[in-house]
Image (cartoon, rainbow, N blue to C red; front, side, top):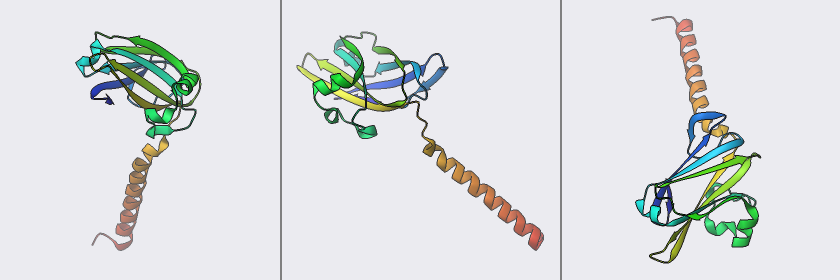
Length: 164
């Protein structure tokens, strides 16, 4: 769930050619054609102009990136790879198609214009393309190896000392 000011959206990514039915809520595992879907949880967003941008994380800000970290509007435009002009999405679903050609770090930017308050809101969501973070599997393997080691140790003790 992403917050844009007080409004909420949900991000989902798809790789239609490589993994057609699998959804990604954070990183995109491979380069190639992608579909990014942003669902408007807050219905008020349907009546507002919303734009979307994908930029390369040229400053290597990473997962802690904020809109303010991205620099000036000119710097953002210079790092831009894809831009959707502001428009309204009355169905509450924004669909973005983009072909990622390089492995790397990227930042998505969603900007909303609230005409009633005469104010804009931005949110950013950093993500990686084509990188697998194997540290997420570390705990699984540690538990597996400790469990196997404990089993072998206890089985060896039982054999050595007998079944008394």
